[in-house]
Amino acid sequence: MKKIIFISLIFNLSIFADYSNHKDSQLVIDELVTKHGFEKTYVVDILKNAEKRDEMLQSVAKPAEKTKTWDEYRAIFIKTKRVADGKKFIKENINALERAEKEFGVPKEIITAILGVETNYGDNKGGYRVIDSLTTLGFDDPRRSKFFRRELIEFFLLTRENDLDILKTKGSYAGAMGYAQFISSSYRAYAVDYDGDESADLFNSVDDAIGSIANYLFIHGWKREGKIVTKTYPNNVRKFYKPHESLTRFIALTFNEDGEELYFIGDDNFRAIAKYNISDVYAMAVYYLSEELKT
View 1 (cartoon, rainbow, N blue to C red):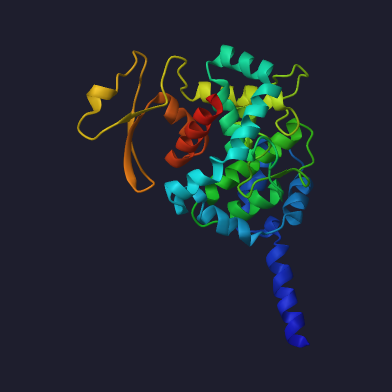
View 2: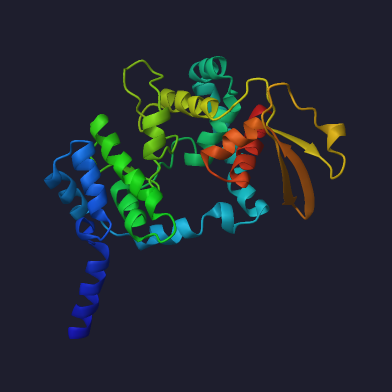
């Protein structure tokens, strides 16, 4: 009986970690209070109510983009139903998509493909409390704790600016939110009001998500006249790849697909997609899905 009680106590302590007393929390508290005007009691209370989630540490350490082969990763997104749902999404949201394409130069298929990869067009926006994600990763992830502590500060600001309940707002295991899966800093910097209600709401407004994705890509180097990738062959790049005049940089890409080595040149637009989720396989999956949506 004593053993059961002891194990239970350890389990509870691991979940209800009082992050207000963590050795690195004072820097976060001080910045939120002195620089951003939060009440100290409010910040401390929120950190006390955050829960440590070990599965988040495990997920962020082994993301699909780094642990799966290209064939395995591609198969997650290039499915008959996801393609059909994407075409349906385009049809239902054609006005906002065409407006974004005209304003930012980002094709409707690319915007839709990002939504398809990120949240299956809004069907899976994430079920974790963002406060748990950002405290767990900000204080207990040994590799990227500084990054996530910065996102934690951004999250406090985001919830205050948008009147969100900081303890109820949900997202991915890494703290990404809404249709577009923006992290807090991206939400504050790149989200736009695209439905005219004077609020950039990525949780509930499809139009805002469409406009925000296009805005993000545009700011990160999307070129209206640019390509995404060009299939090529080793030692014969010049024959197949003709860079456009506004190109700033291209990258060589190699993917093993169904046992065959495929070679591509990634253009500025490929790099813009890759900045959405720092991964070449992610950007290529978006490209593949966007091509399927054109047919």
